[in-house]
Length: 171
Image (cartoon, rainbow, N blue to C red; front, side, top):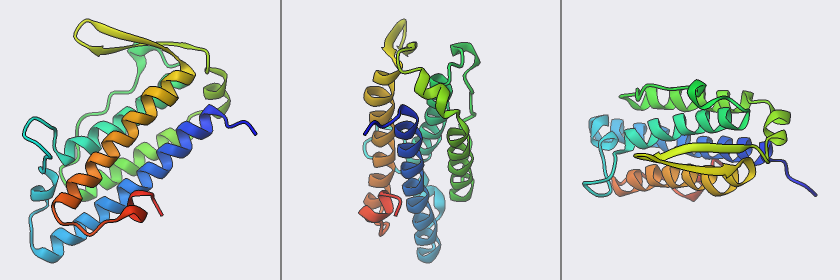
């Protein structure tokens, strides 16, 4: 059996975003129940030099939309740019849903046909990385997706939010 790149990219993103929505929803409820301001959770960091929960959600949603666009052949200068917005759990949950819909709408046949496409992208000041489409999805897109989703989950667990593996898994 062969699994298409579109199934991997879109299926993994959909599941990860379901899990992210689960954890954000539980965090909102936990903050309300404890009488804690949402920002106490949204500003949480694992370490001072790391980005906060709000940024993790904002970044990974934009990353996923841009990744799907890359795999459909969108030119680098035409990739979607999403403002780093969402200052509340409700706004972030809505952002996740909107971005999930954008990724789901990407054309499967185009993604699958771009497995050998060369992707050149910036990875730092005056640095670029070149990958083919398959390597991009499997070795760059997925690890980044799971890193930031896991970081968001861990930030909420660190704050005492009662989320578990089933929440993370999008079940």
